[in-house]
Image (cartoon, rainbow, N blue to C red; front, side):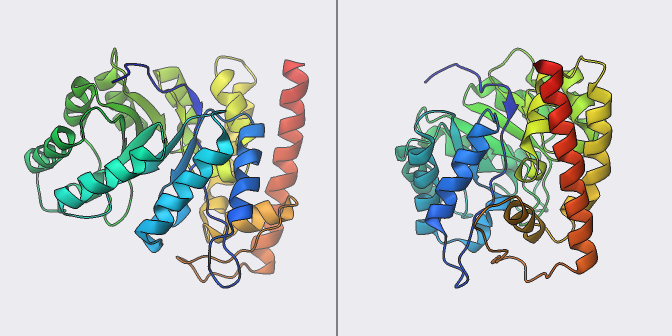
Length: 307
């Protein structure tokens, strides 16, 4: 088992392009993978909530992860979720199948490891059983809001870090206080904490986070990549301010909003989603288009700063 930590930077929570018949657009997956990497991201989270993973079959989940791994060609590490069943035995089987595809880490969905009423002792017991049965497969940990939002306590982060098995931790509390506590809990280990909340990215980087893993990277990854690298620069405050102002809008009607944003940027992509039948109004589209123009200007400014 490797003790190498996950590289710092931006891990987009990838969206899944779909055709009009709601089948996966595999060519679209290839184009999107290339675009993320060309935008400077550190890695790719290929099977997550943004990927509409709970609306995919097991076969589609595996094929999606395999496709991104193949297309990335080792340019960046790829991680993918692997615990979609309440049965530990079936989780183990799927984790092994996902690992065999060549993903860098198989991500454990926190809310799938215990019921909402179960305490941390039960959760830890279930995760321990998974660890024991999956050998030395590198794992990630994800506070996915579905099927319910289970946050991992700082004490459990300390425990998870101590196992030596976990690498990437996607933290989704949207609380900078909780995030700081978990960063401290993982300090000195190979567990790297990634903030899913773009509105606190600057503060989290200064607190020791390894980077960003969230939905904003489907819209404008370049400013996020720049901020993760230049968070100590005085100009970082301006970048964070614009990212913070845009955040509520991009969450509205997501992931349809992200697919619209990418299509407007020139991607051959539908706005079809298996998890949302939302239709963007003219107002929604105008606001998203305005955000795109503002982000394009920010990207140009950042390029000039680093030229």
